[in-house]
Structure formats: structure tokens, C-alpha cells
Length: 97
Image 1 (cartoon, rainbow, N blue to C red):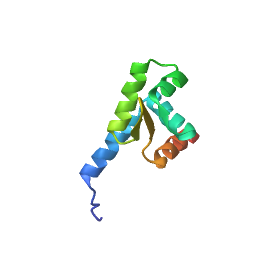
Image 2: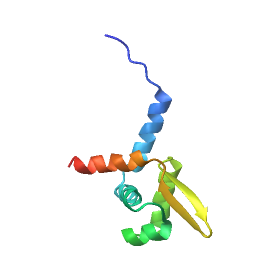
Image 3: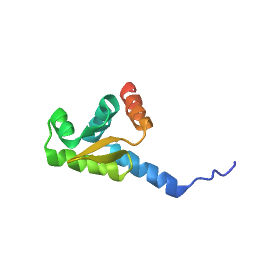
């Protein structure tokens, strides 16, 4: 049997991203951004009917794991998916149930 080579550091980063995504609110945020495009934090907490602090917390977790990117526009920070494949992953998960 042949030994398989793998990059442990790369796999650990991938696992950390998946762990960051593994929360119902974060999945909902990813779905919204995938469907609606870039949004500011006030759009997110209003659409999800959650507290502003909670929305900011979840957005920061996703941003820190490079799942989301942000851009400042005046007083607002606009969040969007860092890669369209992330939205496709959530769509795939939703089709599997």
C-alpha cells in the first residue's frame, strides 16, 4: 500500500474554516451573502432578527477565517463572501438533507 503525502498545516487551516462555518447563524449569513451579495452588519442583523452584537461577532469569526472579506464604505463596513465556492458548499449541504 502506498503512503499518502498530505500538508498538515493546509488541512488544519481547512478544518478551522469548516469549524468557523459550523454554526446555524453563520450558515445563514453565508446563505444571505451568497443570495443577496454584499451587506453591512445592520442588514445582517435586521434580516436575521438577531442582536447587532451577535451579528458582528459572527461576521468577525467568518472574516478572521478568511470566509468573508470586508470593505469600508463611509461609516459602513460591507461584508461579502471571500470566494463564491463557499456559497456553493452551503448550497450543497442544503441539498443533502
